[in-house]
Amino acid sequence: MRVIVTVVEKIISEAHIDIPDGLNQSAIKQHIVDRYNNGKMSIDMNIFQVDFQSISARIGPGKSDAKSA
Image (tube, rainbow, N blue to C red; front, top):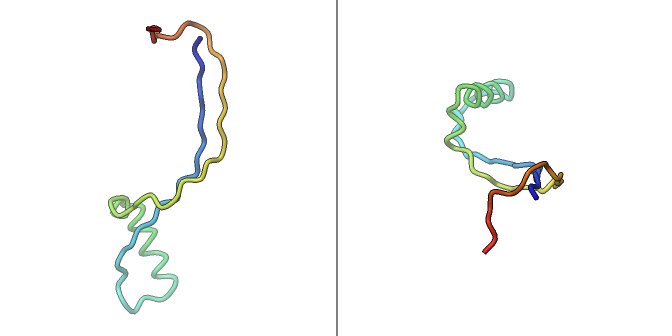
């Protein structure tokens, strides 16, 4: 029997980055968004927390490829 299992998790990542001094709140937000959008932040991201949301399974047609011993 083949079973399709779906797991949904919420992953929270955290990055410690340097921000130029003297920026106001709006400029800090823009700096972070720009860094995220151009991919520069992804190299700094570390998984901080994973929260389990749900798990489900449904039986599918066909047989398993695994052979029993």
